[in-house]
Amino acid sequence: MRAAWYEKQGPPRESLVVGDMPEPVPGAGELRVRIAVSGVNPGDVKKRQDTFGVGMPYPRVVPHSDGAGVIDEVGDGVSSAWIGKRVWCFGAQSYRPFGTAAELCVVPEAQVSELPVGVSFEQGALLGIPGLTAHRAVHAGGPVEGRTVLVQGGAGAVGTCAVRLGRLAGATVIATVQRAEQSDVAREAGAHHVVQSGEEVAARVAAIAPDGIDHIVEVAFAANIASDEQMLKVGGSIATYASNAPQATIPFWPLVFKNIRVLFLGSDDFPLGAKRQAAQGLNRAIQEAWVGLPVGARFALADIADAHAFIEERKGPGRVVVAVPSAR
Image 1 (spheres, rainbow, N blue to C red):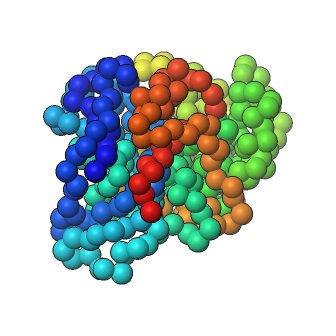
Image 2 (image 1 turned 90 degrees about the vertical axis):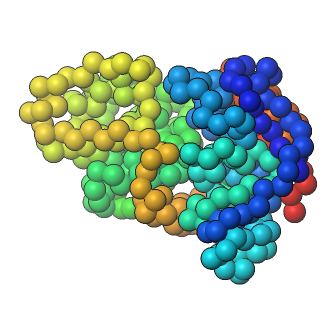
Image 3 (image 1 turned 30 degrees about the vertical axis):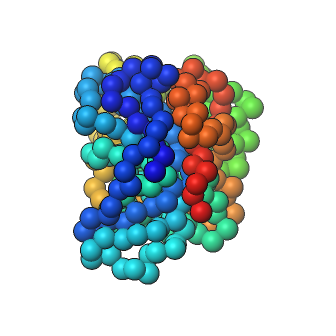
């Protein structure tokens, strides 16, 4: 089969290789997906860059955790009824060497969800990491029905999903965006209110929610923690999955006096039950008249290095996908 891989970390055009590999065979409890579209996440790029100093976890890595395609083979203990089904998968390269940047990918059955009728492979390939992260970020602090949720970065991939999922869960959702032209993305996802981020964000939010915010989904922890504390009610919570800087100074005593809970979320290590709940919630979200996440750029498997460079160099908004042409 054709696949992309790297055996050393570094710049995309110096590390990524496209060539032939033996076809993988599903083991017990696993399914094999004939990949149609592979989703590229910033996390996939950071693993290849060795951003976090972990090094090469395996001698060879086929990148990308998310993808969509058709089941063509199952392992022992898995129903043959899966064969031929259109699916999306997540976590393919989480604690595993071979992800979705290949014609064929083997994943555990629990990490596969049937793609709803009418939903494209492309949209399916975008759901994994951002969708699971968003679901956990919305719900990790407890039920949000009837509560006020603030989604920082409501036009980003995780933020857009969080807006949609919060709205479906019955929350009043306020989204922040960096630029006014991003407001339509957050509103289309279901935000009740959209405000521009910046120095006046706390005042803008207070004008909408004078009693304060119950829960915040946070994309830039270091930059926003001080204003987050100002906006939260006593007993409120923050779920953060990213930061603009690796070190953060926090307003310790104000957070203590308000009894604020701060939840740090890493998608690779969410409990499997939470991931399955997220997958169900995402399928519901995309079935209920949501157009899904915008695609910013499309690449062929042969051009995977360009796909990674597109993300590294921030060449444009939207998600990045890699099409695998042999998929049926």
